Image 1 (tube, rainbow, N blue to C red):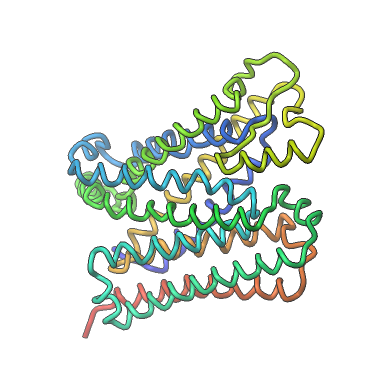
Image 2 (cartoon, rainbow, N blue to C red; image 1 turned 60 degrees about the vertical axis):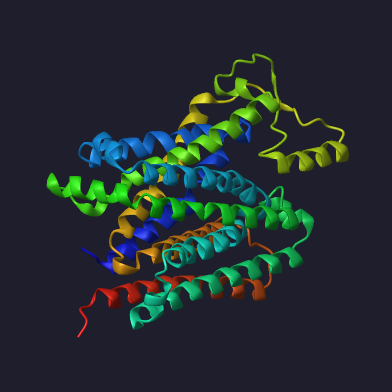
Length: 390
């Protein structure tokens, strides 16, 4: 049964989880990016999805094995493509910071992930032909404008802060590289929405199984997450192993190298290799200067916390999606808007905007206001769509 107000609440919880997941990684010590990203990813893409779905979906494996092979293949493939975007998402945070990085990357992700599925299915005409559908589209547009204004705030920050001030909050702040990576990441990350849409037959089977066993259809999309995230794991697993080999960081998982010097990863991806070379040229000190073994228990616990928190964004997303009624596609906008709202607030808490002008602060406030308003408009449009026609 649809309940858009409750659906918006679930999407806000998912946005809070997504905006917060990177925080535990900040406490990881003496691990390369590829090491803690893969450890956290095992919890995000494998452990958490299977445990939650296994506990909540009756006969999970039977449901998955009964799904049409084409639906499974498409969901998995889109997950692989989404994984490419996810890999570069970490670079976005590193170059632009949490607030601006998420605003730009998720802006493209919101636009593509929200509008392409109904366009592909040929439903956009019927959507814009109703008052409720027009209200939902208005909310989507408000979200995109809010994202654009958040990006303007980031550009204003770029002009106002000195390199020293930027480095104090985002150590490797680089606007040009960050914007390029964020654009690519956002477009590829929208494939997650396509994967969820492709896996709908699997969700329908899960719903039938839940209702047959007296459960709630609130969990029907959890098996779809299992397949899409398996695709994302494939991409990230391969790339992180390549980086472990390339950067000789594989020993970090178990502190197998007893020497007092551990090598720092030269890259989070191929794009970071250039930055590493610049550092080695501009400084006499080599990159491998971290002494002592890594605190393994601490690092594993923090990475696990980050990974599970990351998964919770889509756990709540899948719940919110079941409550949005006939305009289910708008869930992606609500999710993206919620992430940017909370990531912007995290940016304020972490002082990423310290030293900027009142104009920049005004842009931040206006962007937040529009994003919050967009979730209200989309929710109201969905509510109108649940009312019986006269």
